[in-house]
Amino acid sequence: MRTIRGTPLCLIFLVLFLGVSGGCRSADAVEALASAPAPPPTRLTVPPGAYADAFRAVTRRLSRDGWMLDRIDAGAGEISTGPRRGAGLLTPFTRLGASLGDEVRETVQGTERRVRVSFRTPEGYPPSANPLGPMTARVDVLLSRVIRPGRRLSPVSIRLSSVARDPLRRRPPDPVSIGRDVAVEQELAERFAESRRPAGDRDRPLLSRTPPA
Image (cartoon, rainbow, N blue to C red; front, top):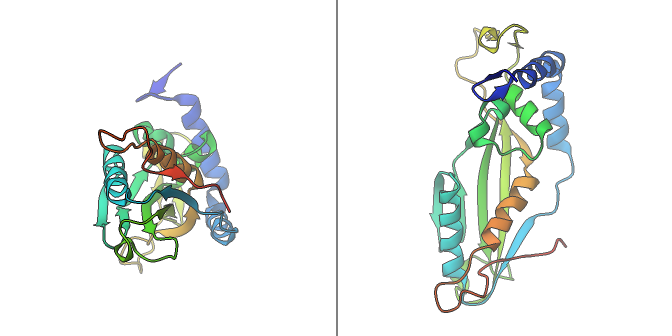
């Protein structure tokens, strides 16, 4: 099968077809996503006395997985990353979508993801209120997408695609929040749950999955 930099030609033609046929509906799709009911949060449980090790384990895991850390505040119990961008099938080395359909849509539209992990006591306070007590860690993967009106995809070559520009617009469009990526949240939560305590107590997990309420 012929490919362009590892991407099969048939997939590229599929992307172009979907982009041409569905590009005019991208704004409506984003509006529908933004108005959809919020899914239940993704949470993990941290046992008493394990907060410091759990916080370090989450930070190291995100860094090892290629996320650029933006905020690390152990007192407030907050870890956040900068945006991670992907172009779907055209950037297979940064694939984050949960399905082929996600990858096709991201090839046409482009999506940014940010990770935020928040640690709280059972009463909802920051860890500084009781750093040795049990904690709950909430994992959020926030999705945003840049909507570019007037985008014209060429059926001949991606390089021939163009965007009609508004001469009155002085800066690029801002990303539009479209909700959370629950599939990536759950994948990250599973990776965090694989973390173990330091030597001497490695059989006990630092974080465990919390069933949805």
